[in-house]
Image (tube, rainbow, N blue to C red):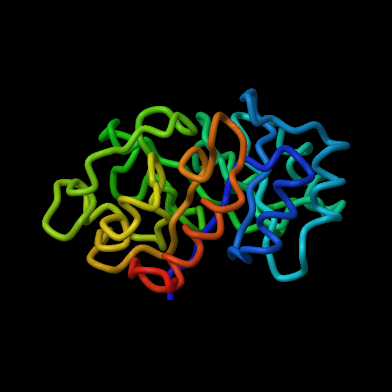
Amino acid sequence: MPKIKVCGLFREEDADYVNEARPDYAGFVFAESRRQVTLRLAARLRKRLAEGIVPVGVFVNAAIEDVAALHRDGIIDMAQLHGGEDRGYIRRLKAVCAAPVIRAVAVGNRAGILPGAWEDADFLLLDGLAGGSGERFDWRLVSAGGDLAAACRLPCFIAGGITADNVKAALETRPGGEPPYGIDVSSGAETDGVKDRDKIIRLVELVRNNGGKTKK
């Protein structure tokens, strides 16, 4: 069954919504963003988050010691990297921190997904040119037979502009010839810039049903 991550929680009610919907992962954005959280807020959200939902920290070129400290303090269980972090950064992070690494890749930039470029990560997150923008990339590029499919050697999340209307198509992509490991949603689970309870619940239900229709 594909996984689902709801990213960009920044209010306490956001944690309540995901607790009700029960996605596999929840994301806290520590990088500059309208969804950015402070350390104090992230700690509150983590404490509020239901057991079994994996908290993921989202970073852009953060100091390795800062990421490791968040993991050590139990605020995040995984690290998602969106900046210029290279293989050396990932290796140094793993030397001091046991958090699995999700490496975000801008699919519109072919150099970002060359074979072996991120093999020290544990997962890839395939996104549009600007992470968090809600812009969809051409999923055919990473599907079986696409120009970049062979480069997707790690379990892959599909991200970028995913909504209830197109999540079925996202689940039908085949990065590296395999179904996606998971789906990552943020703006598609929002209304007027904030998380929407009903959209979160519907997206989780759709992914749990592998893109099928939810029961009425």
